[in-house]
Length: 199
Image 1 (cartoon, rainbow, N blue to C red):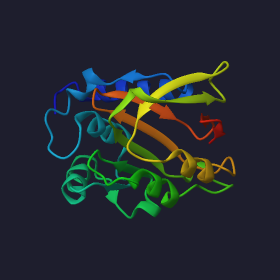
Image 2 (tube, rainbow, N blue to C red; image 1 turned 180 degrees about the vertical axis):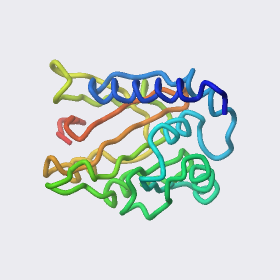
Image 3 (cartoon, rainbow, N blue to C red; image 1 turned 30 degrees about the vertical axis):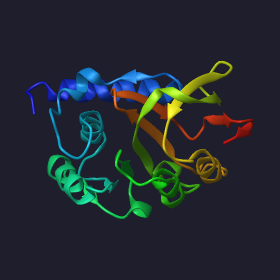
Image 4 (tube, helix red, strand yellow; image 1 turned 90 degrees about the vertical axis):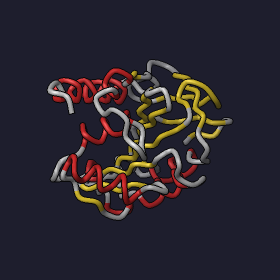
C-alpha cells in the first residue's frame, strides 16, 4: 500500500456517502482504485471499497469462484471476520459469481431489526456496467423527481430487492461497481421502477 492510503480511502468514503445521498449519481473510483494495484480475484475498486468499509469489528462474506482466496486477502488487510452470507455485515459479489447470485444474496442477507435497522447487510456487487444497459427509474429521498440509470447486470435482482425492502426500515442497501470503476449506490429508501413494476 502507498503512504497516502488514508487519504485515498477517505476519498472513497466521501464518494460512497455522496452516491448514497444522491441515488442515481455515479461516482468515479478510478483514481482511488490505483491504490490497490493489480489483485487477482477481484477488481481493485472493489478492494479499496473493502478497505474503506471493513475493520475487525465487522463481518463479511465473498461470493465468487475464488471466494477462499479473496476472503483470505480481505481478512489479512482489514482483520474483518469472514462468515456466512446470512450473518455478514458486508457481502461482496464478484464478477465471476454464478447467474442468480445477486438475487440469492439479497434474499439471504440480514435485513436488520426494528430496534436496529442499521444492523442489516450491505451488498457490494461487481457488474458489467452502471452507465449502459437496461434503464431503471429511481424515485425517493435524495431524488428531486425521477432519476434514470442504465445497468448491465447478469441477474434478475429487482424483484428480490423489492421483497427484501418491503417492511421499511428493514432491508438491504446495494452498491454496484463496474469494470470501469464507476460506483452506483442504491439505498433501501430508493424505489426502482422496471417495466412499470415498483421495486
